[in-house]
Image 1 (cartoon, each protein chain N blue to C red):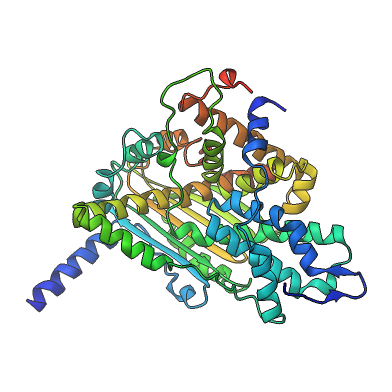
Image 2: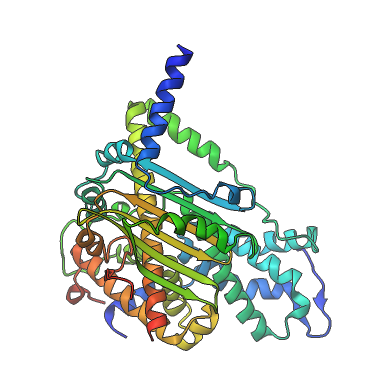
Length: 174
Length: 101
Length: 177
């Protein structure tokens, strides 16, 4: 019985992990963070949640359509009491994975004045979008957002005005 | 200022804090004048965890069932995830615009 | 009533500062966080911070500016911590039963709830503009951002609010007052 439960848990975990297209590798920051957010919603959870989203509500309706084909949404946020708790090396661990051929960086902004770095990556396979990664780092906060699956750029752009998401003009990083 | 802005001014007019706010602040300040930045919690009759637990019990008692509860949790987590993602995308777009100026 | 010492060199009385500025501080927190209990906690934290730093406050006017700036910062910090909890959903905003020519008494509450759904930076810009009546340059100083960015946030937020109000059947031309 125990073996069966262990196997089921392992399979479940594998299923959850397999939707993730890159690893965050940021657990070591949790010990230094004053607050953390950890959301791991695999495909099964998203489809289950979709049943409870209200189609009559404009925002939930848009989100419902957006998550229809997704394989997962993974978010980690770390807040720190003071600057200097994370380093470029922490970000480089993620960037290294996003330098594979499938990923393209489409937005990259760095401000030396306020120590802020913001990057957006898209994953392409067979000329189709299959993932989105957002890396946002400030002196006292790091956020990594990973949406796995056929993220529709037009739908993402249409979310402009909903939940405060602006109409993002997605283009190749120059 | 157009009509919407006038309505916003009316809607966002200053509100007085609950009665006794100033007294509570003065009492706290007198009690520990040189303390660190720890936030002193007000005494509430019901801790939030208890209110949340009561809500869960009520939901279960109302016949919503465990599945409904799980669904509501999942729904809130999905909306929370998109709120966080949307805040970041919005922030990045603003950052891009600032740099482009 | 609890008596506290005044700061000798400037004659500032902490109790008087609390009474004079409590509405401003509480309202910034309240309108940004849309949570009365949390707003009171954060407002209290702001004033206790003032008490710890009272010796560095040079005048009444300085105290007012200091309190506003710290209220903004503490509210944003509290809002970020609260991202882990679901916020007010637009689904909770009551739909008007029908469009009428009478001024919607719920409009104020609708606007406050819609403001609460804005991302943190434009949300605070709107609070400072319409609660505190600050101009974009003053908002830029408080939030340490360029004036152009402030104006951009104001423009986009107003457009967003108009769009959301229109979807709820609240049309500008029908407002009477």
